[in-house]
Each structure stands twice: as C-alpha cells, then as structure tokens.
Amino acid sequence: MDKETIEKKVLEYVRLVQLEDHVYKKPSMLSGGQKQRVAIARALINEPSVLLLDEPLSALDAKLRQNLLIELDQIHDKVGITFIYVTHDQSEALSVSDRIAVMNKGKVLQIGTPYEIYEAPSTRFVAQFIGETNSFPCTILSCEPYEEEYLMRVQVPALNGEVTVTDYEAQPVGTQMDFTVRPEKVRISSNPPRSTVKELNTFKGIVEEPVYSGFQSKFYVKLDNESATLVKVFKQHTVFLEDGPDIEWKDTVYVSWTASDGYLVKDTAR
Image (cartoon, rainbow, N blue to C red):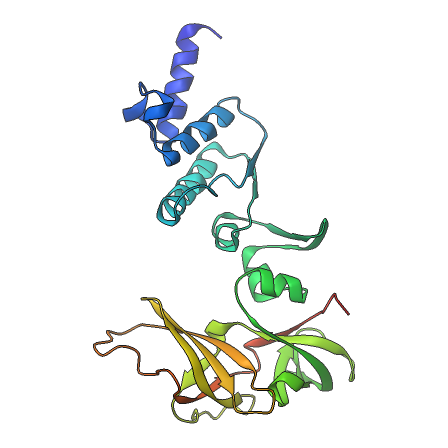
C-alpha cells in the first residue's frame, strides 16, 4: 500500500479503538488498557475473516476489564467478523457471546446461546462452571405430564427430603441425576412462605454466613436436617436499606423455590 493509504487505515483503526488522542505516544507511556486496544487494532487492521482472542483482558483490573469488554463488543458489531473469545471468566463469556462452547479436559460438553448454557446446562460440570448453583445428587421417584412439560418428584438425600421439578424431557423412575437450582431463584424469608403454588419446595434452616456486597446479599443457609446441607441464596436489594439487610447471621429462615426454578442435569462422573 502507498503511504497515504496506510496512514488513512491506521487512523481509521486508531479511532475504532478510541486512541486518537494518544497516537503519538510511545508504548511505555500507555496504560495496560490502552496497550490492549493497540493490540486489538493491530490484529484488526489486517482484516482477518476470524479473530482469535485468548484471554485478552485477563491482566486488567475489574472495572477496566468491564469497560473494555463493552468496547470490544461494539468493535465486533462495527467490523462484522467472527471473534473466537477464549476466557475462564464466565461473566465475560455470558456478556459478549452469541454462542458459547464449554470445554473440560479437551471435550466440548455443550454448545449454545448464553441463555441456554446458563438456564439449561446439560451436565453438572456446565451448571457449576457457568455461574453459581446449588447442586445435589437425586433419584427420580415419579414423572407425570404437566402442561407442556413433565412434573417429577425426586429424592434428594442432601436435602433429606423430596423435591418437585419440571423438565421438557421425561425421565424413567429410578434414574440417578443431579438436581440443581440457581441461588438467585431461591427465595429467603423469616416466615414460612405463603403460596398457593402446590409445587413450591420449602426448607427451614439457619443463616450460617451472610455476605453483604452492596447491590445484593449472599446467604449461606444450613438446613435443619440430618445432613445440615448448605444452600446458597442471592437476594437482590431493590429498596433502600436504612438499617442494613433484614436477615442476619444465625436467623432462622425459610428457603423456597418453585418446581420450574430447578432443573435436572446429567452427572457425567457417574
């Protein structure tokens, strides 16, 4: 290319990564985030049909990583090529992807949209790797048609009881699987929940560890049973808390979720 074309393309990609105010700086004068943008621009200027990004934001602090992730997504929309993004950060994968492939020990366990991977994981590993979840071995006791799904009653030794759960696939009685429910799907209250939903699963316990993190609180509830199983609960703070969370350490509480909140997954270790 002639010099004029090169300068024009360089300026185009410098603007794309929002570095036009830093174009004459030496590399040592750039921050970590700015250097990452330069690396992205250098890769894109050759106009590849596919761009591989191998943990491109791993060395950055959390807030800068989140900002660059948004910018990277915007760049992807502008240039319109395929990005293959390798990351161990599940939130990055969910935020930026059209499709996700979850791998373990060289095997692809599931490919799907972020929603499918999170809401309907195919195995226990996928459920536990993408986000946080409560997961327990279980045995199918009964399976009946329920609207457009199947309503199953399962025995969960860790909960010292039975749980109802819906699924799109029927499972034979006696099948061993894993029952799992995401912490944000679990409700927590100081009193027994009032509900007309017959498929509501309710367990009593004690708050073993409350963790306040601003926008939400995480509760680790030890169930009142022989197993003393811990159940994780995430409670979003949607109103002003003048005196802090209303549920505290060692409070007696009730945790509950509906049949449609939980799901069944295969335990590939069995």
